[in-house]
Length: 267
Image 1: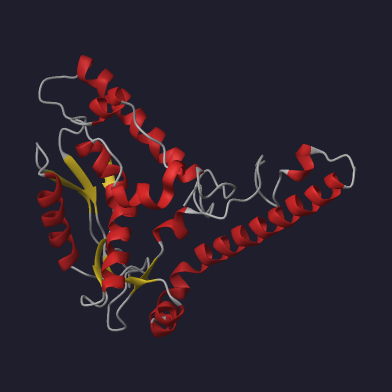
Image 2: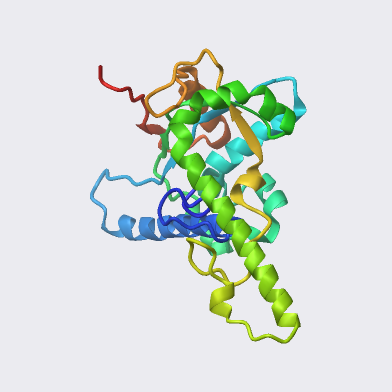
């Protein structure tokens, strides 16, 4: 979200179709490089791993092919994006199919450095959600659940709105500048590449983004208890996530739950 909506550090929403993938790619490469150094100086029995974070996801309608596909995308963009390179040396095929060249590639040496760089599978998980296709009908059906969590995500929603407005303003600026340029006017590249409230972008606003690529809608059952963070209390999710990790990665060194739990306002 730091490179898509700009709601977290570094607060960028300039190239949401490319920068999130570049940032994630270099995080993985930095991890592999750090592990190399660590293993030359580590103390006996010391271990290292990249901690991943995800919720557990299940299709809202387990009979719906579109909900099942949306759930696969949710798992790919929230867990497999990093887990697959660490354990298989490649990004998930579904990400490559959707993102194409916007998703970076690993060299053979980088693949070898990544695989085996985790001494154990470290995972954070706080909740679980139902997933469905992001369609107008599903948004309508799940509107009550959306309103239920709105007080908790209001700040993020406002940030997303501002990012959208900034992107629209940037696109209008680029289009206007292009029109003026064709008529022979002199255009300052600086003035044409700075969206409102954001850093410079040299090539306009892409029509893709991390959120559009993954294209799923999360739903919260109306009878779910919510934490003070607005996250559903879903105790079953963690166990099912651990089974999924073991089945798909069988990580040497096992699985370590590095974060889990709930947060409630003290009464």
